[in-house]
Image (cartoon, rainbow, N blue to C red; front, side, top):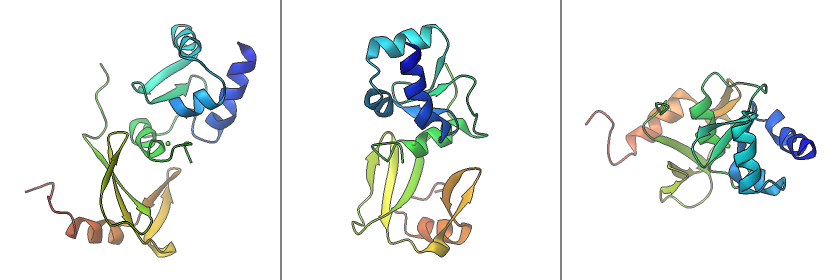
Length: 143
């Protein structure tokens, strides 16, 4: 089991201690292995059945938001009240239709380097780009 924990620690180290269930499977963890590690309190759920965190690893200041950020990418390049009711992400690509992935809404758009920045380890759109994206949303949060 120790060799499995080491394999899980490699991607978690780059992701504030977080792992997607898919990353656990790639590392060779079965559902039973994950259940054992949860029972031993070496892993803890961040988003049930989707993202876990290795205890003793890094802790992101916004763990649920960071966990939702990991989910859109298949490989993670990612009783508790949720930090946000729904997360929306703008990702680069040619298809303008929004999609739902892992409970998050993905908006696909062309992004320039000036459209995003890194904040607390998360790649996020700039305030100007976020406001521009909101003006294109069919439903406004305050409506």
